Amino acid sequence: MMIVVFAAVLMLPALQSEGFLSRTVSSNDCMELIDEGGQISCGLAGSNDIEDYDPYSCSLRCSGGANPKLPNGVCSGGEVNCTAFVKEGLRNWKQNMEKIRHEVLKKWCTCYPKD
Image (tube, rainbow, N blue to C red; front, side, top):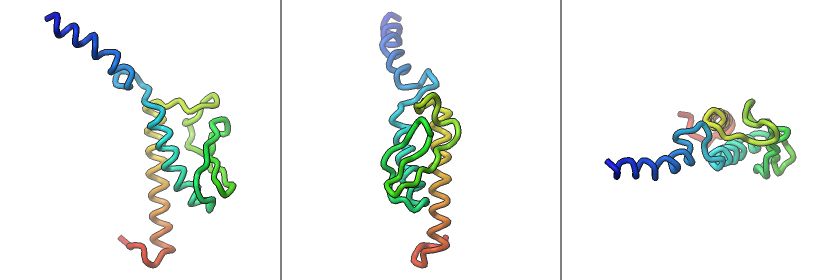
């Protein structure tokens, strides 16, 4: 019995820090989604690659000068608070960017598969 309690005491902080028992997730998860979706968003805006993002204006900074907006609810108080809700919003945004890119390539690139 003591072994079970001891194991639970050792595991609880690890679970909490990884977001299993809390609503926050790793901020790296959100940054990765911003980077991946941002690459596509900047490309669709005709502005090459993402250079950075501005949490105050909640927009991307693209190397070609465009500043596409991040999805609503991502930035709060000048930072990205990477909750499960925000991560899901970023995941949906990235998927939407991928869908738009796919449709553009289908329409404008003759060598792109037409489904």
